[in-house]
Structure formats: structure tokens, C-alpha cells
Image (cartoon, rainbow, N blue to C red; front, top):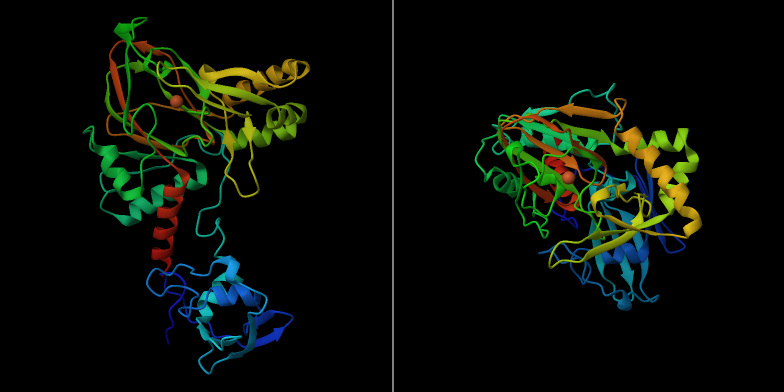
Length: 393
Ligand SMILES: [Fe+2]
């Protein structure tokens, strides 16, 4: 049995037991007791063909202005095969609905959080090393790519080892995931450190010096900072300079529990973040810890080199600084911070808005070259959902 659905997925055939029309809803039920209240205008919008969903694009065609109160469901019955048949007034359109597609809505699998790994907070005790996958096969093996993305989304941090060390590897990896987020640093950028160049670096970023970089998130100067960051090591002769990662989600949870006054300050008081490079003037004002609207990913704005101005009442500034100091000390502590060496062929991916990344100071000479790129949450989550749904079917 088969019916087209308003998307391109294959759904298991889960026959309905009853369909009852009442007060503008079609109340659906399955034999196992699961129910769905389907509003008549929503059903009409999702009728394949007849001006509902385009059979080719599977996208909705109804302009909301045309969804008048005169459109009602005249009848709704469970067909012999367990699908739903509905007839609408005033045009008499008869529509057929795949029971598995309706069931996926009843089960909540249509939500933006569905088909994704659950976010799992971690500390150095629970995750002393980044989860690591095989970079030599990630481009060709969907199972490896899916496993790596699962950890990237769930823990906010996931590493590949054994990747090719050519400078174009990021570009090929991005072609498996989605569009690269371009910035004023370019779509693919270099983080180069040469300890013999101390004090002489010609750069517009602290990242390209030999200095320690405290825990931070990149580009809080943007309305939406880049979602994920990927750093591919193509050369490392230097000693020290370990990559440090701390789960900002875990730090936020600990701060809320242990220092609620600091949590309140960091989630409400705003700062202006300011990229002051020659020829650019990116600015955004927001809180240090930004939960956004319900369902939004956590966004930490934690990059002191570009934190420009308090955007708050002067009376709030002392507590704003005290709260930032506490948060940053926690993020930099052994309780939360994992340090690991970068070997040529390593690639570390992390949620740039959740994970606080940094770099210890270098302690011996040599060059280190990382190639970086950003890919936004939308792209990574889309590919993760597709791979997980494909693997489950
Ligand atoms: Fe950074």
C-alpha cells in the first residue's frame, strides 16, 4: 500500500482505527491508543494536489489569505486499507492521507528537534577525550559520517583522526555536509602560529599569534554567530599549544545551580561585540549567555578580544564583570576543560555557539597550521537528520 505524502520520506504503513469529525477537527486514533487532533484547515493544506501540496515539489500551495472559514471538512473516514479519506466543503475535494505520515505527526517526529541526537552535557570526568572517528573513510562511508555527526550534535564536539592533510580537505568534507558559512575571514581560513615570529605577526586576529587563547566562542559580533567550527591540522611542529575545549552547556548548568546571581546577570545584561578590522564594522548587542526563544540552540557570546562595550545601566557593570569572571574561571578549570594535542590529519569539529574553545600557549618552536571553516547549524542538522532517517528505514 502506498500514498504520496507531503515530503519525500517513506513511512511505515500504520493503519488508523477511527476518524471522527467534531468542531472543525478530525480526531484520529490508532489501534495502540495514539491519537491526533487534525485541524481541518491544516488537513486541507496538506492534501496532495487540488491546491494543497504540490505533487512535484511537495510544498504547500495555499496562500493563507485563501484559507477561509468556508473551507470545512464534510466527512472523514478510515478507508479499507487504514488510510484517511476526507472530503472538503465547499469544493467537494476528496483527499487521501498516508496513515504513516499522520502517525509521524502524532508521534512528534515532525518537530525541529526530531531525528537528532539528544544534547548531552559533559565534563572532563565524563568525557576526558573528544569522541573520535575515522577521518580516512568519512568522505566515502555514510555510517562513519553519521556517527561523527551524531557526536558533533549530541556532545557539541567530535574529532576525526587520520584525515588527508591536504589543505583542501575541509572543502571536500563540507561537500558532504552543506553550505560553508563565509565571513570576513573567507570561507576557508588559516590559523597559523610560528613561535619564531613572536610579537611580529601581521594579522587581524589573536588566533594567529603565539599567545594563549582563553575559552571563547567565535564571532559573537554577528546576529547569529557561526553554528559549527571545523579545524583541520595540516602541520604541527610546535610544542604545547594544546587545543582546549569546555562544554559551555555544562558550565551554564553549573553556574545556574551554584551561582544563580551570576547566571541571572549573564543571561540578562547585554554587551556590544565589535569586530574592528580595517574596512569592517560588525557589531551585535546581546547577553553573554543567550537561550533565545524556546527551541533555539544555546548561544554563548564569550570572545573577549571583540567584547567592546557594556550595553547596560552603569549600576549593573560591577556585577556583569563579576559574573563574567566567575563563568570564565569555571570554563578554564580542570573540571570542564579538556586539552588535547593537534596531530597532522586531526580535524576537530565543535558547536561554536556552545563549546568554549581555546589554546594553551606554545612552549617550543615550530610552525602550526590549521585550516578552518564554519558551517551553520541548519546545514549540519539537516544532514544529520537525513542520515539518521536513512539508516533507520
Ligand atoms: Fe576561536
